[in-house]
Length: 305
Image: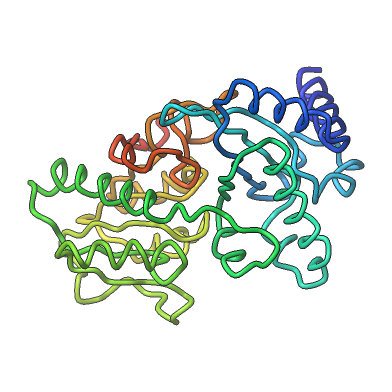
């Protein structure tokens, strides 16, 4: 019954959002009293995740229509969290290009009505839309890079006796990953990029058996391909959302590797986003990049049997 009520609430919100009324009301409030600074769009990680909060029959109707699901508080300002029942597979499929273009125009129109000039996007969408002529999203890479750099420094202090080890950067050739790699190298770190995009799918043999910090900024779940290659001297920092599942953490723990998750920076999302964002705002959604040093770093322990 609880699950049914939750899905019904989501359906009502999505239906209201389709009328445009919520955006108009928020826009009037924002122009009178201020306080709203951004909209942040996030999408589902899998079809199963969509089925957990939406009635299957209604998913096609709302797949390309952003709906409000929460409020961000960070950096002294508020932002709206929007979502739609789509996955990467949906918006990467060329057959959906017209629908995806319409989605971008809707998101831009919502920002205009609400009265905000900052649109931020989750996952790989910033990279996908970086050259879009229909939607100009705010570049949050500097904030993400700063947060990753700070989280890495914390782990160096805690796990490597304040001496920077070599860095293995999973996804280091991507839109965000390349910026992270450049920043780490500029600050003197020895960085080894591992990314299927450049055909590098193996952890560097030259580091095997040596202490190293592995940082995962790739797509969610990509780290699973490297578990069997890991060795005990590694420490893993995951920046991807959501945090690695318990089964995956257990597999990594069997390799005697500690796992940490960068849940974001200090802030609140109400209601809280699941799986890794308690008392934290995703790096790709923050308002104040200067506060990216206030990272929320969580040690992920394997399940006890």
